[in-house]
Length: 113
Length: 109
Image (spheres, rainbow over the protein chains, first blue to last red):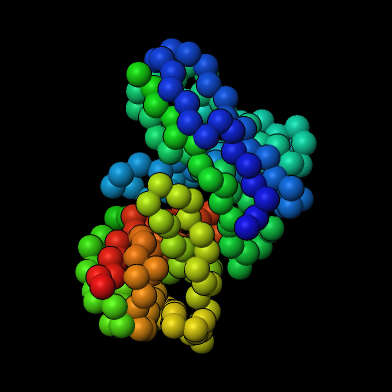
């Protein structure tokens, strides 16, 4: 299995609070991604990073920010969590190139009450 | 129109059966294709990449039809352990993967 660790694995918090999810990789892959998975939707890309301090928006980036200060860490922040952000969040990594598959972490289950 | 569409199922098949899933994609410029497997409350795991010439990995065969813009996954001699949700994934460029919502398979003893 790819060396990807997400933390925390589960979190319950209240609307309006800030939340930060962490993804840590030991594979030295250049690309890192944050997705959310909701019933009735496929995984949807929130943000991705193509190098240290290089990030870009995905399909559902509103309400989320990211940072990547080291190759191995990619942080996802919800500045002011809303109930619509209750979801399962997955981090993924890959090497560059169209044919390169992505490998996923175990996921974080986030509930916003 | 969604980028990737799959029949959600569920497909309930007996052990030993052969089952096939199809998936259609909307972007004709899509570059690469994958099947992932996702068990309940787990992360997606790569099952296989799909190549233009088709490819096989044991009991699993993947096919790509660019003219009709669909990919397929065939599972032969189904095992109980094959029960999972199968995700069709399409790369439309710039490391941007689009995921289908998945097809759920249950293999029955």
